[in-house]
Length: 297
Image 1: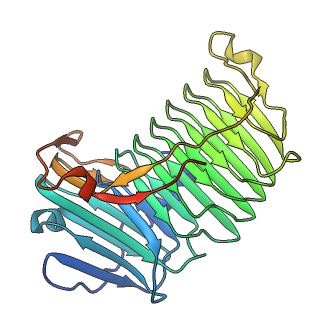
Image 2: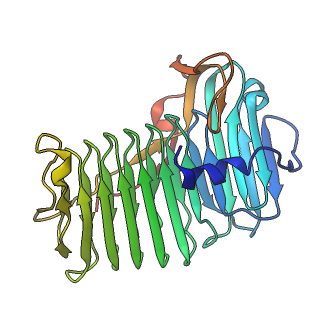
């Protein structure tokens, strides 16, 4: 984990718990949230609350709810899982908070998909994808400062209008960024591709490409350079102009039909070795598990 990310995880070591309701669905309320770290291999939905409150709702089998640990301290919330569990039913975990508050999302070494259907803070927004799942942002990152950090094989799809955007990209996943209107700075060191479709032709795109994947852009001024020290075999096209960038449609599903062994803890696995997750039959057809869908643009 990179130092900038460690601070978000350390804040979850000894937090207070919210009050929970009984039954198959638990809802916990918190005084304030602007930071979320997801460390369990379960897909997560983040949306805007309709009542102005900060809450987490878990709709799942008792075995799943028993394994989950949701910890709160200060302005941040983390979700982990401990011990073995399995479920053939849908697992629905929803984080709700007022629009315009969210500042930081981290997926920490899991395969979970994160669907974000709320707006980020106008001051800043940061996404860190350290896993192999997807992070899909439907409402956009429109803050004065936007940071996107990816080191796994999961795709990141963002439509935003940030004034200054920093992109650090490593790993095999593709990164799609559309609509940004300020300066964009790229540091690309992976085999995946970076696709940028700025809002206007006056946007400047700078940085360095030391990876094997291309940095492609549809408009703007791109001066992303190759790093000669990386060697020609590792360097792809530093900056490639394309006619258009099409952001593919994304559909995120609720997790269903999994068997988990071991601990998925923020910052690393438990003491009994690396955790694992396998698929088992789900009781619901896939078309009944849709959490969020986006359009091609």
